[in-house]
Length: 410
Ligand code: PMP
Image (cartoon, rainbow, N blue to C red):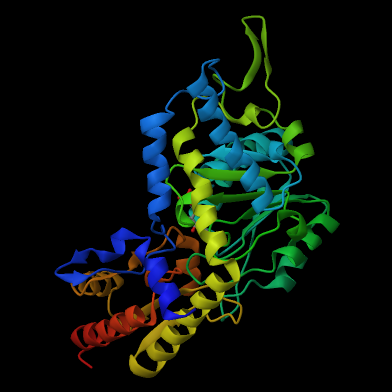
């Protein structure tokens, strides 16, 4: 990506101009949430100023306009991930709610005591705890795929975990800690050959690569708008229609019914059966502006630029930061670097970096089982997006060298 294009991209994100402790912000917590281009915020403004009316209910014009805007997003998302039908696109609050929906509705209806499901050790808590909550009620067994020293899933163990009782596998497409890109297609093929349903947590994949849910073979695929330059409060659950049709509603309320009486209630067709209550229709309506940004920039260009930043930052870290330990060295890795500076505590590193204007995440990254497997309490994590630059990587590494010398007296 040339400098002019990068500067044009950056100019769309006003937050990148702000300062922290009198230094220009270097934002490297894109895995937690990415920044939002002006056009998304302008779309939200425009909705509040011109088309705010509750969706799916009104006969009056602005209610219909608000409904159209929301439903256009559903069509955009359908095409974006190559779903077969817009009825397969359910709006949720985020990846977390999407996975809870699958666990509660599909799992609650189709899992029973004696069944088995397979997760992996690199899962975000959002793809562990919903299954445990259900397990407490039902009593099925959870099996866990381990990782190797590079932070890749051990596919031989994965294969060996399947039995006659395996009903479902649920795993992340990309690790939010290690950056590892998992071989979803192959894993889905194996699961399907055992008759298991495949749930994919796509929260860290969709912002960084093109995703075709049908090509991958995902039965369910979950992701969040706020991690892909979009507004907060919007998540997507893709589900194959025949599975969604067989599932009971997740929550009850307005919008999700066909007819209600005290003698009995019937439910709306897909996708509305799973969308009880007033949705976050203004943020949903703004989400396509984020997809426009991605489309205009080009997913290939985004991926290539992020790979360049990852390679550049990793090489400088290894050669110039004595004692650094990097967690996650898979060859197929997205632009996330989890690390520790010698024995220094991750919070100390993160706080000192903040004083130098660098925003990185510290802690367990909602992946405590993975931390346990790595033998650490937490890490520091720097993660990149398309608006980051090599100059920012330089500021980050220069700051890291300083912090390392303070904390480890090197
Ligand atoms: N899964 C993964 C892999 C994630 O990185 C995250 C966000 N950190 C989530 C799930 C949860 O996403 P959200 O908080 O948007 O629901």
